[in-house]
Image: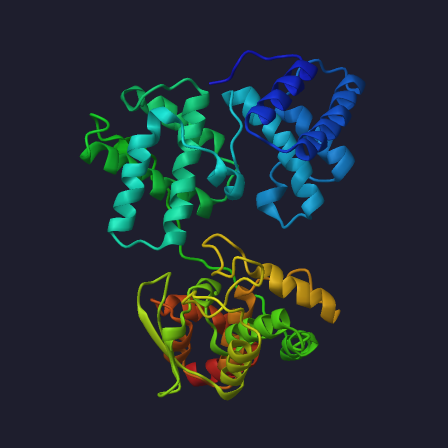
Amino acid sequence: MSLCPQPIRTLIETVLEELRKLNYSENSIANYRRAYSRLARFAEEEGETFYSEELGSRFLARYYDCKVDTVKDTAPTKRLRAQIRYVRVLGDYQLHGAILRRKLGRLAATPCPAQFKSGYESYLAECRARNYSERGTYTRGNRIKNLLLFLHDRGVCAYDDFEPSSLSEYLAACMGQSAKTMATTLSALRAFLRHLYLSGFIKADLTEKLPKLRTFYAPKVPRVWKPEEVRAVLGSIDRGNPTGKRDYAILLTIARLGLRPVDIKEMKLENLKWDKNVLEIVQSKTGRPLVLPILEDVGWAIIDYLKNARPATDSPFVFVRHNAPYEAFGVNSALNRILVEHIRRAGVKIPRDVPKGLHSLRHTLASALLEQNTPLPVISEILGHMSAKSTDVYLHIDVKRLRQCALDPEEVFQNGG
């Protein structure tokens, strides 16, 4: 349902005031204001008094050579993503009277509206009772909170006021998201609404009112590093200081054992079975046990860190922060910055289409194992995949082996004749 159109400058001031209410930083608001001043001037040049999606698209096309859907169509630069976000916020507010919180960090710090708090916390408690991972519960909770904040902004005062039309309006506001994100959002909302119904917070089962999104399993082909790039980054780390020893041990462990970053953060001293020379963990993502050999170089890197660099702390976790208080990395803290920092220091030029996150080291390990003719079930076990489908995708990056499987058309015709 669209709201009454406002003159573009009035709409801009209303949106900026809403950003202040949402506790956006003054620096962020200043960035929005600069972008909107340029958009307002563009509207005047075009003879437009009111904002429209079509006007926003023309503005992006003229000044940034992109469009509103560029975010999901390609991989725009950070600067382009910001400009597209500014335009989308205006469209969101004009159509729905609310600003969607798209960044999980800010969203997580935003309190749940009081009228929805009891049902929201009840659902999170059920997730924990079912032993869902903390990371999964955090992400699922943020997707649900996004809905609750949207409904709060639209004047919904209680769970009794939940209406299918309100859910439809929210999903319409999310239509710019990718199919995968929409599927994840719908899954979270369906589980939340079912909990509300079974727990007596709402009288009708609204899960039937949610649309069904048909998705297909089509994972992207992983982009991997070259072995020399990994060696260059690891070799550039200054292991003469405590932080360098820690970072080297973390990156080497992921590169050599393929652990997920969350399992690195949650690795405890008791998981290191030095008598058997193995690492025994329960994976955060799958809940399944995983046993890996402690390779010689990994073992010595961890020992060097524990003996000569790890701060004196009672924390049971292997890797801890090096700023007081010396405790484990937070559930939501990203370790990717460690890798990015050392990529910059090493001066390694990783192609733009290759991810720079820690997960890319898992992909690189899988590719290397495949080139060494390691069977897919073994790679799947090392990486801790629950399904072989997750590992099959690596076949697409082993071009040499794919070429060996290619058919010779002439031979086929000869045999068929």
